[in-house]
Length: 166
Image (cartoon, rainbow, N blue to C red; front, top):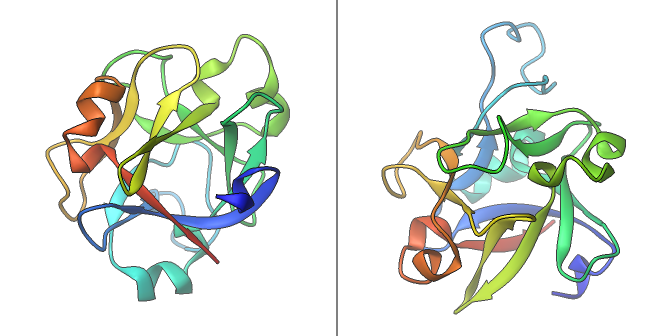
């Protein structure tokens, strides 16, 4: 993935379906549905056509200068993907804080290592062997959480993504 070396605008599609990682519109955000807010959760949602129409399914991959480790920022926003509550199994994937926050040494749950698996990738939190996973399977509305490690992700397609450059 050449676009992942410095900066890339992309979508994250689950490898076994046309569902994309999407930022769920929070209850307090009905006036401007395209504007994301801190704390909004990542879910599996819609399809490629929908992902192209909404910035809620589009992300910028920012280099950390550590090989294969990135900060994943929501397009048109300062907010970044984050494992809420720390790098632990079951931590909810949501938007939280900005790039400066994600770069701090004590925030490894805001940085993700891209690990090649077959035709796709797993996204492993930087400091633990836990990957972003669609809880309950590759189903519409599945919540993304940290779950199990890279070896588990190799055999579970709801822990594998395809990068779709925009």
